Length: 317
Image (cartoon, rainbow, N blue to C red; front, side, top):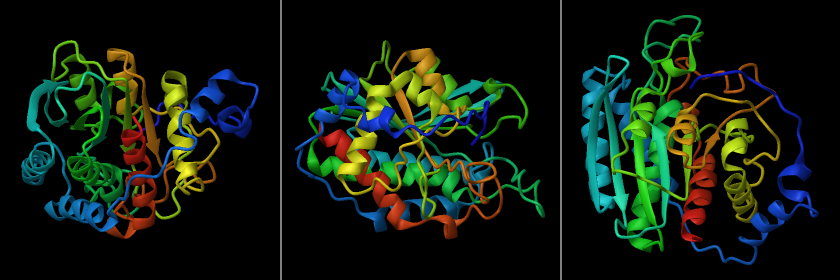
């Protein structure tokens, strides 16, 4: 995970959910009121998918663990999607392996679900071992694990929309103080070379670092800028499901993450669900880019909050 310019914006509950004189907010709220809860999310399954990735070792591009994990993820998507494949390419002289799966290929209305699956080549925020890669249980594996379980559930539930899943490679290869374009190489490549010509989706949801205990999913500024209506829908859905304590009604920071390039290059309104707590030093937790980012950071209650919310959003369409 990377920081573009951290802009701590004011907390503003009434701007997000409680402003009764805003037509846009009312419309977003009304679309999900009185909609029954129709989903269940298997947290044990999602947790195991995260464990499976971590067991391969750090998924640094070019490593054996990276190759083995790519094969594992493609196989998993082949089980739960109508089709799956690995999109290969080169971006900024880095080999890219994006893993892609599609559900309900014949449906015109589509939703994009995505996460990055690689790990940073070095745990550069770690005091003792900054040059060695970390497990990346939260930063990388957590979002992927949640989405695989969502795909498994969607195979059974038969949604009314098409769903495209993209696991982006080489997200965490960026320079710590470098340009935004040194990050998110897989999503930059895909957004300029989508897996289908003229690809479009109604909206997209990116999951990044969605596993820590007592996570805070503050509203990310680029998500609000590009996908405000869908941010409101997701956060309202979380509240309706009883997960409001995770989906914080306040603004976090403006982040460079995979969703930024999807918004800018493809024009698909895409939001980022990402742990960002303004009370923490970095916002991302003391495990961010350190060797503390292992399975001990992963909490099943948080996985349920995210997975159940996103699955319900898809099934509500």
